[in-house]
Amino acid sequence: MKKESLKRNTQAVCDLVDRLKKPGRRTIVAIAGAPASGKSTLAADVVKALNAKGDVKGNAIGAEHESPNAALLPMDGYHLDNRILKAHGLLARKGAPQTFDAVGFCEAVKGLANSSALRFFPTFDRNLDVAIAGAIEISPSTPIIVVEGNYLLLRSAPWDGLAEAFTASVFVNPGLELLRRRLNKRWLRYGLDPEAAAKRTEMNDMVNARLVLEESRPADLMLD
Image (cartoon, rainbow, N blue to C red; front, side, top):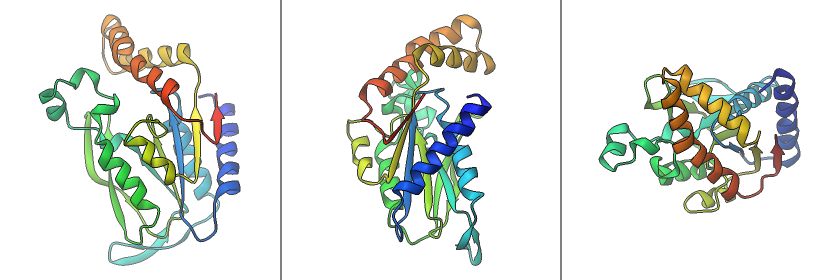
């Protein structure tokens, strides 16, 4: 995502949050899109911008500290372990909806709406290709949670149950051809040869991308 586009889109999301947030209630924002759509970069920039507006008091482990105004929760921390995927014959489809702990993720997001306790969530290390438990801390005093992931707006269960948790939703769609180029470059960057990168892109990532584009419900804000 170009710097000018990122700045413009970040401001658009922040404006949406300001417009839809309800006083006295936690705001949960969904930023969804296909693989390589730029949603992760946008989500991180939105959290940075929201935190620049100021902090609020909160509780750390055993002590009081300044909690951020916004926190980021990526869906990728709920990737199933490679050993489980291999046992179920799903390793080649890693990144597809069925390769996530979808129920666990959806319940965790819905639980954040009214949580009054300090919560911990997993993150995903792309270099190690493994989820790391308890790596994200979210204080009960943090009023805005930005959730990002491919399948946040899917119409099918259990993803469709997230609709009730989201205060605002954003969908990023740069188009299939740009997605294909970005995905191919990603796999080349991770050391795959050109033939393997193209195969991984077409046989897995682009299948997932089309699913996201065709089966997601409309968002409050659509970005290209």
